[in-house]
Length: 216
Image 1 (cartoon, rainbow, N blue to C red):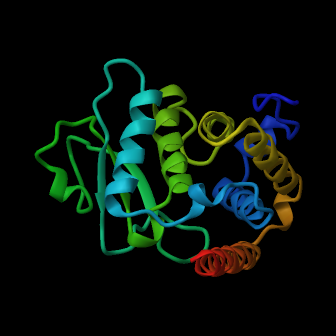
Image 2 (image 1 turned 180 degrees about the vertical axis):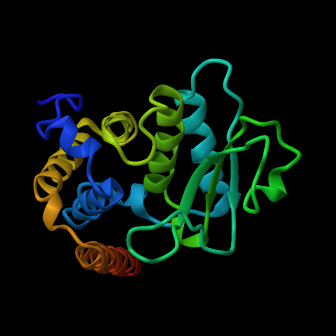
Image 3 (image 1 turned 180 degrees about the horizontal axis):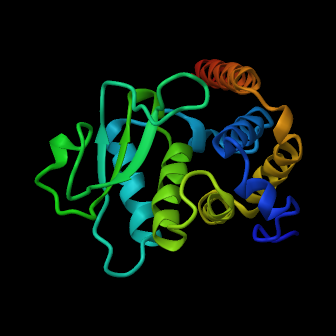
């Protein structure tokens, strides 16, 4: 099996994409539609389950001496220049000395505290891995923020650890395919991929409910 570190797509292609976040999102929705991830990774969690999983992953992945992560559910969308034109469902950040409006509720936390915030739509394990990847990339590759090459490599590594080696390799294949077609990607293609992935998730949830009802 190929290593998740052995990406076939040229690094420079990812490094200089106009919007690499679009490629990462497309690859992830492609993988969801292909049922790469088990239901436990994409299914909705309670706020407590989501926070517990975030703390578990961060404690395992953070460098020594790094503070614990603060997990917070918020009502409003989290705007971080999303490629789809919609608000983000989850966001990773660090408490800064200057702070901003979004960080105002966390002003009592020391600068350098990691934050993961999500709306109710973002309470799932896969989004936690995505946001933890941002935090670890900020520490390991500060020169390459966002969804750059380091993000793709580290996200695949977390998928290998927390989902399965097969899921990591499958996501990598979807990512490479989308990178090679990067100049043709548009926001419309992301919305279409997301709609298809969400439709399949709803069908999977409905099938699961029917099986549960039949077993009762």
